[in-house]
Length: 225
Image (cartoon, rainbow, N blue to C red; front, top):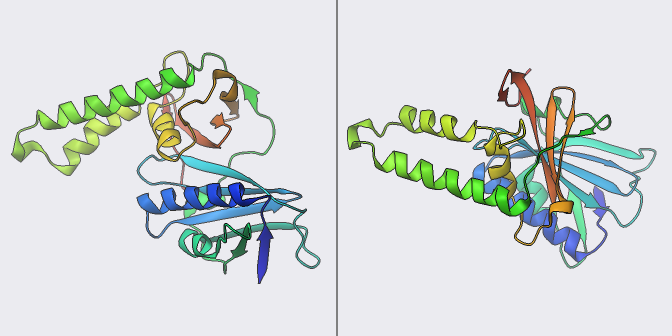
């Protein structure tokens, strides 16, 4: 049994909150864990947003499990959440599961370059609020017989695939960051940033990151290879 010793109770609580949000969107969610030194990275993919969410967790001491000094495994998000002990600031690594396709295609660890033009956090949240209101308005205007899943998906794609003004970042990435607790009220402009590396874009906040991968001109998403 591999026990992770988290830096403190706050880190444990934030990890549990992140896992809970992922499970809200997918009860069968899996997460990929990578640990080295005193850092644990938890990767998840909430299906509603088509982005990759990354939560960095501080460890109390460098990871080491016998002769292994790094950890890289895909596990059940639900089982991992159940193992988090906030008081003790520990978590047990569950048994490995067969990873979903996205788990084999993670953003690069290095080579990230700053991207200009990212609006302030308040403006990003306002953009999401406007997008949510537009989606609600457009769907309410549909006749009952026209309110099909295909039509709702079409409206959603139209709205959420738009890019944040002045950047290449799709609105859905910001929506994901807010929904997962990464873009919190009170976040200051200097605390957020937009970065690129190859085909990837990453929105970084103090509470986590959201990454999207370019699959075509003006289109972002995770390719499943």
